[in-house]
Length: 168
Image 1: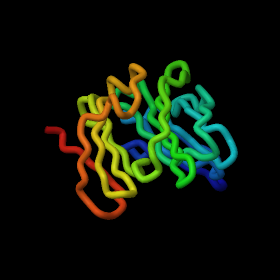
Image 2: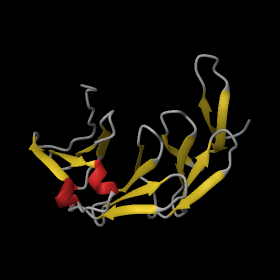
Image 3: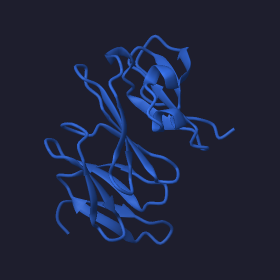
Image 4: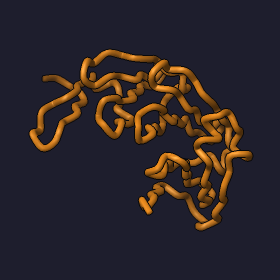
């Protein structure tokens, strides 16, 4: 079997997808049909897990740090976080089109991301301890971060590494 990454289905525990170990699986769509892979220095790949076919190569920068699919798998949010040049992008998964891109301030660049279950909001946790809630629809329609910002919560005085959202 060699060095490889594997996705397993439940409950039967069949291997549904394999990728070479040099490619990291960064995110899996909710239905398991898509994965975003990254390898330093290479364009990230959006792959159909059923066929193994590379659907699109996405220019997310030197390395995809965080990926997040919308619940319906229609869009992929990517983040290349770095102290120098944070960069967020939203991609349409069917055609690989870049929908919007953002360069947030480094102290608000977000190292943790989540979407509400209704797909209406993107929530980020930042290095400066701030939680930001954005209107995802506005971001998908081309708005910038300031215009799409719904709420800024200065909740902590340290790095936020994970955000979760209750379905209610």
